[in-house]
Image (cartoon, rainbow, N blue to C red; front, side, top):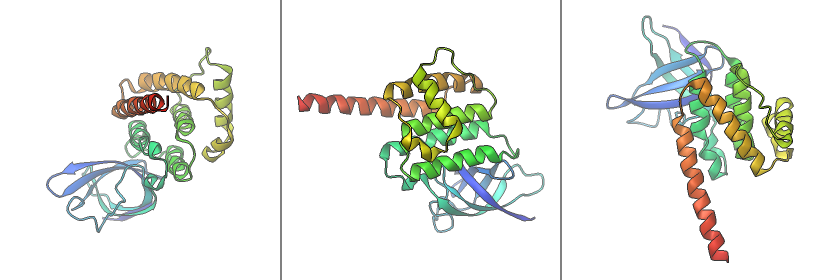
Length: 227
């Protein structure tokens, strides 16, 4: 049984038995894999924080004949979104991971999708504002899936942002001026296209909406106190 080593992006984990975890990860060169991380729930020594969603790292795993699940040997983290200083950005980790998981195909190499996900982690760690970054991610994800449709009713500011997103890296978003209203417009448009493509609503979207309502409530209370 050969040991494969590759760069990978951790997408999600869930419990298996009393001590193990199943790990879903997107490799750079061999597509999405599902593997068993033995004793990952009992001891953090072997995997440490390498199993957190959207962690980039070097992964070693063994593929076994006639088995759907690979055996995860190790994860060596190289970059984690947990290093982001913006607490709001951390709320988007599950959103990015769930979208990539839904769009990635089992064992179907998709280096472009991998690089998009890895660039989100780099940008979050580098302090790129999360709202424009999320709209950038949605735009490129839809394009990579071949389902992006320009909105003929889009405002001039929305079209200008998307034109910038089409030609710049995520890090260049720090110099792109865009209003909160424009970002909300794009969030609505992209969200509708994503839901139509996946034919379902994402759990992470509901979580983000709850976070947004809580933040709005906090801002309103602070505003009333300031008066």
